[in-house]
Image (cartoon, rainbow, N blue to C red; front, side):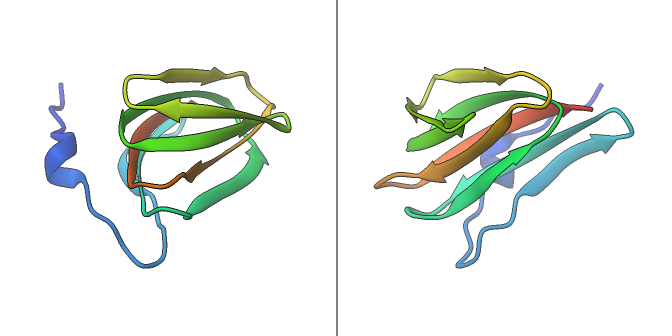
Length: 99
């Protein structure tokens, strides 16, 4: 078992870089801490489960934009294009990417 304190790991930078909470050959768990306007461009990947911890953002899945906020969970199927950007305020989310 591993206990991860999201509050302790949360941090923001001038240039966005995900904080990898855990990585194994078949999955990765990045923590996404974005300032307003920062983004991850749409890209295809494995199954992705995203949970918005705080703030607001816009997820782009297969070209469709969806507003997301704290408490939302988004599931993106393997191979589907996905991206996210912070919209108007800081965004904290984590993802479980299953390869």
